[in-house]
Image (cartoon, rainbow, N blue to C red; front, side, top):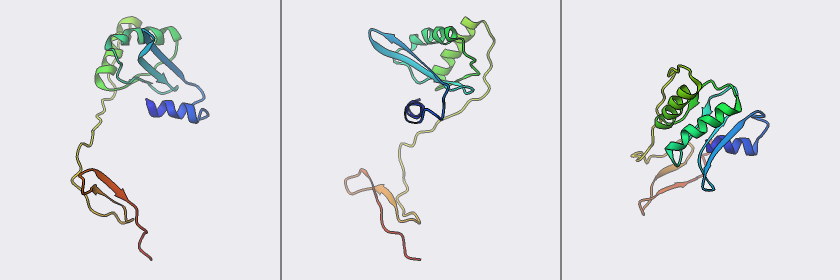
Amino acid sequence: MLGLAGTLRDHPDIYPVHTLWVVEHGGHVICAAVQTPPFNLVIPEPVIESAIPALVDAVIGADVALPGVTGATPEADAFARAWEARARVMLERRRRQRIYRLTQSGWGGKTPNGIRLGPSETGSTSSQRRNPPAP
């Protein structure tokens, strides 16, 4: 969602029509969502999961065409359940995607363009750029 919000800020012409929602509690944002029609609503992990029904109420109140929701499974499922109950509709899962996180890389070889990524002497990741080989 942060990437999409950055695009909306830096390049507003890409998505000229968009809607942003926030749920606040005690002066703090505890849940948020964004939609750029005709795409799905995007919801990140809320600070407080119980804020999702309030988000659903706000989206229903905005009277927008919502084709679906995109987010991590717990948040997307919680939003879909709340939407189904409040909008009195039957929902179906159309697509389930997985996101993988790289936690360790065992590869430290050289690439054809001269960039080498891998552990440095201190154990942290380092990168260096060298001039490409002459033709």
